Length: 465
Image 1 (cartoon, rainbow, N blue to C red):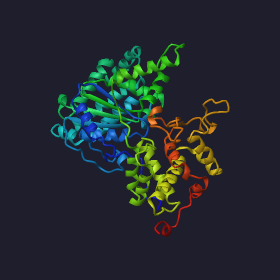
Image 2: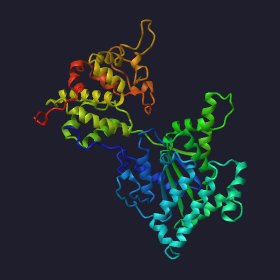
Image 3: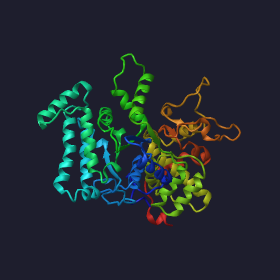
Image 4: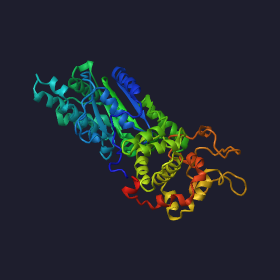
């Protein structure tokens, strides 16, 4: 019964998060906004930024070839032909070790534009030599920029002098480099000044701080051009931390001031930030993921168990990983026949899969000593929330975790609406499963988890009996 095909973490054009309206709205904005323009797409790791951006690219007429390996080499035709927009995809983290990431970006723009049918069609009358010459202009500008990783104002003159020696032409300062870039891009775009290039830069937050900063600097200095739109996929908090490590600040600046300076720097480059909405129904999304590989009886048991409760992280990547573990654990104990027993069965499977997937330290303690469950349960229901002096505390093994609520109703021992404590739903230290533990606490004894801790799969005939 264990999954034979695991859910993968590849981006997808299949919209399971009801983004369609937002995709349409933002794609229209990208297609019609004044240029130059930089749009930031913010989301926590695993929130679906790459899928969202790929869906935007597809909506704008982007066509992915085998280099867009996020789709396992499959070719995707554009949703509609759009000769006014050329889209380029750039995986920033792949080039983070380059001395000058902006040069790598120019080379990727050159490579992808050269493969676009609409660009080749424009140059049909002029011939391939004209196209190659125009594309080489991008490489030449990259070489000029590459002389100095991120040129400061006083070094621009030296760049120009070296360019003059190598190319026997007039000195190129930053403005003339930018003009040459703009002219070259316009000559490549299918309809010249009526067109625009939209460059999607993904995984900027996965780059080391220096590489991320250098790429942002390059965008600011060289590619702040008419007819250019950049869409940056980023975890805003991570990127701000990276900027903070690189910007020049007074030596006596405090942490709060560093954060403000980093935020202001990012705002200067990216004044337009769209923040991906979190899935409102994480249990419903998880149920849909289970349905892709499991029979409906197992999915129904999960739905009976959780009902409308909020007990899973609202993060697509984490839910995919949890679904893989859930299917594995579901094969360790037989599904009972009655609906009530099935709900309890699913609670045990969900709790074990959740802790195994997201909390290695807790799992290892529990796996080594099954009685650890009693301590974990006591903490979840509030019996380990104060010390001998009556002060709020938590066990050492739980010090890095947050319960969704610490306020229990004395009459029912059940929590109020989880949002009363307002934990940030994007934080990875929220123990989402605690509500499920509290609801089924009378049916979750250490002995009930022994087959799950052992992890042995039942025989197929037992599962199907």
